[in-house]
Length: 158
Image (cartoon, rainbow, N blue to C red):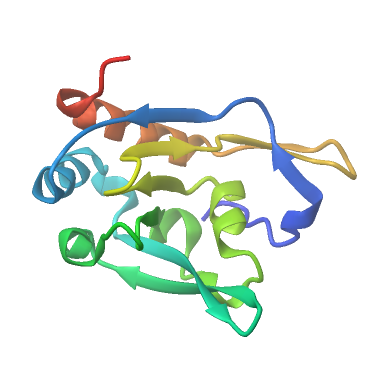
């Protein structure tokens, strides 16, 4: 299991990260995920983070889905997911952290925007602003690269 960064307010992205834009149907996205996710780090879960208005503020709401559920749950309002390996990250309860989307990003989980702004992304290096320590999320970066190859037939041309 990789080191988990809990004090996310003390860490920031180092470099630009990576982004891969694509156009695909929900079924094609599921097929590409299934084809690209390496068995060695299975099982995987999709962590969904949305903001729900409560009084005058927006609070994060976290849900977990199987890969196959994506077409049924992804909508224009519900489109931000993180691919989490239970081998790499363990059984983290992402809903227990204050800023779950930043937590997932800074811990290397692969972001999947779908169906709005369809893309994959990763923050593969982070640095601690207090100590200068650098963490590279090598396992998640390997997964990202395999997914980018699996999504290559659906890559958008720039």
